[in-house]
Image 1 (cartoon, rainbow, N blue to C red):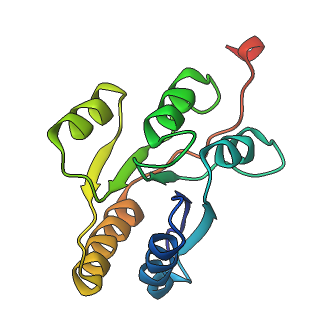
Image 2 (image 1 turned 30 degrees about the vertical axis):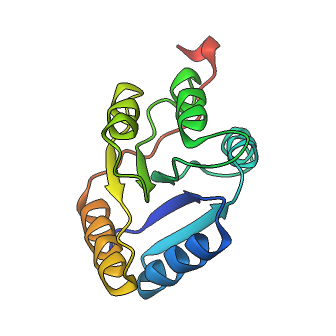
Image 3 (image 1 turned 90 degrees about the vertical axis):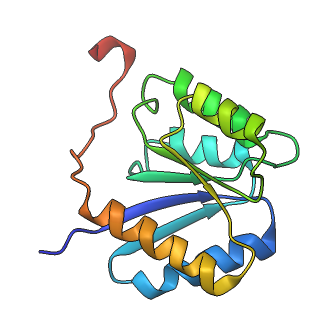
Length: 146
């Protein structure tokens, strides 16, 4: 059976969210994309035990209110979520942003290509990598289980 993955996509920009969903659509049979445009909403989704945890989170850096860095900090501070791979996907190539993301333990940092065909290639590489990665089905655990 072919591997499939669930991606949680968090981006406040409706156009960027649409373009990312469009780029992922070529993998509709292997990739399930759940999207949120707000960091707080995404964290609530992740903490809701009615939803399975995603295999990987794709997170924008520059968002109003709760920035991508704030969301990443919250994920890493949560015992149930901290193991999840988080890939920062941003238009920012600022070295400070990249260093901050890695200091907060991001799994990877991708600078969005402004041309859709090149961006689609970035998503293609991303999907192929994560489809080939081995995942252990994770169960939600509480602090009491540790």
